[in-house]
Length: 159
Image 1 (tube, rainbow, N blue to C red):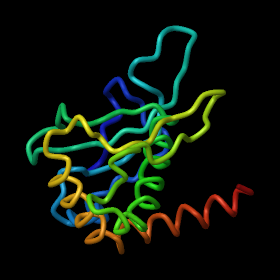
Image 2 (cartoon, one colour):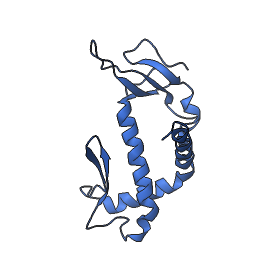
Image 3 (cartoon, rainbow, N blue to C red):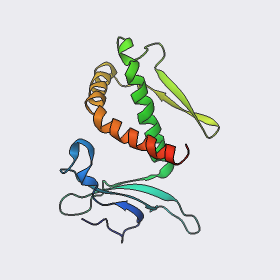
């Protein structure tokens, strides 16, 4: 199934077989493709690049397809990495985090910092964090493969 090129997001670099590698949803995913292209929110004279996950219901392209600016894609990758790092050692805490200090890290970006923390406003955090930790553990092979690939590419790029 080809990613549409007639919509507001204009694909430039694509992966149109994403449904075959979409983690635990591989070969049974509504996420049919990924693209990097010209963002749908571009104004005249201003061009932004975005990443898009193209979802298909089986009958039509879904309005649930997501488009993100590239910096947000990378911010999400940073968040995933920081969470994985936290949960490596989380077993040391009774509730998988420090109740007195739920902030995991402050990651410096653009002269400020992205705070990475456990969401203590979640009324069911003690249950949800256990489920999250288990799911992270269950998906360790899938996530690890992607992180190793990302690490290799970043090293190849000189980072």
